[in-house]
Length: 382
Image (cartoon, rainbow, N blue to C red; front, side, top):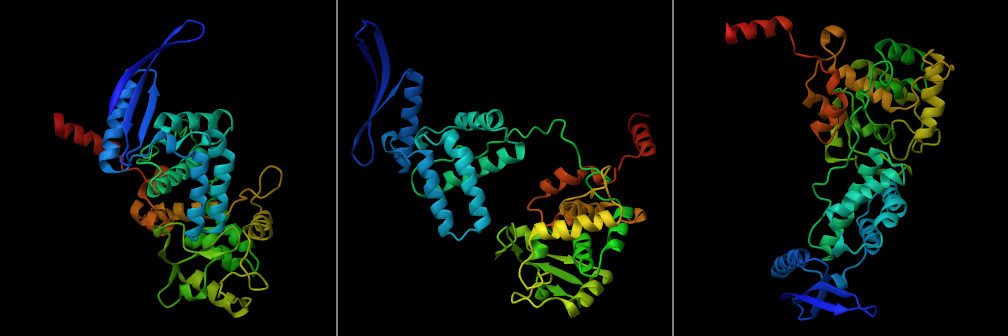
């Protein structure tokens, strides 16, 4: 392996110079790579030497593009049996962002600065939100992991990269704005008709995701133990699959009011071949749109929980999940349960405690006591 300087004169008489890395890979083939600066050539030579020693080197001339790697990624994930909804999301990330932004770049040339510029392009050209940018970068990382397994690259340049999430000025979710108040939940449940009351009682007092409620079976409702076991969920295409993460498989304690509502509901519940607790009239998986438009929003309006235009104040089912979290967090003297952050994380099925705290940290009661602080100062300095 050598790095040498190459000089030549153009047809116009201009003097040019470049640095050439000349080496033979483990397969015995000779490879040449050209750089404008010697330090770049030396850095590449050092990396090639290490990669060849580890048996993971891929010559630049043989490297596939990100677009080609994306096709391989989708094919691999399809063979892995990924949910159709997840595959559709991955294909969208590939088609709308990754291929237009990075498709022509060879995997061997891809670097962390490329990823940073790609994120900037998504922000400036595609007007992608921090959440969308984070999802696309996560998909890119998954793509590169598959490429590593296939021997196309030796490292994942996305590993450790942090998306600029724009959290400065980010609004915290607020009770009465994003989270229904206790009075609103009470009025909402009182306004529920017989068909929807069991569903929304379960949603309010378990905090289950709507996909988990749609996939809930009677076999997972243990009335004797007062528990609901979340084992599966229904995706966008009404297909049943495992929870979103390992933490999503969890047991949630429920009280007698929820259990009584479910017991009465079971007597008239439509028969379902899957044993679903909340099926359609024909026994199939409910659609989220149907639950929102025929259940949540009309009940909100009936209960008088509306905005200035007289329309439902809370239009997303996640508001009920937020309420459950706030109910767990509130001190017992305020009608809540006063549970710890770790307990709240487990019941919500969050994969990390950081996810729980990022969303709900400001709802936990403060331990700050002015008198206690004053006494501590006096004890320390006199």
